[in-house]
Image (cartoon, helix red, strand yellow):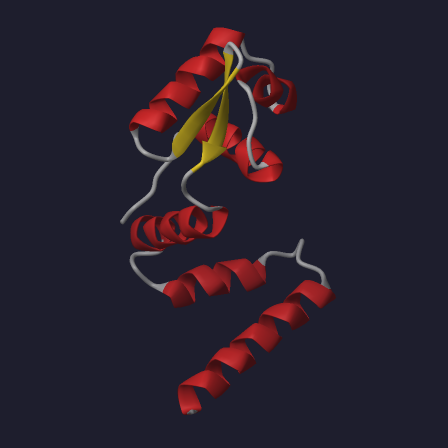
Length: 124
């Protein structure tokens, strides 16, 4: 199942993933850009219609919570990027990533360890 978000939806989901659950006001406080209460509410309702968010009643307010986890959304987004930006080539994505001069030596070594682990799994 492909999970996709608009930029604004992703901002809201990031807050929910961080907090676990939140009211509209709590999401609004944590947003990277200032948005009207009604805008945040609209985004949450759209996410709920898409099946990505659920809510429980809390007094007069709704408390929203994610129904998809960050890893599933990240995997879906990454597959879409590989398909659309890197012509379906994970190798091209990895080449772009390791060519990024902003990666520290520790991050590059971490990538190497993960690749080595994956290669060992394939040999088993």
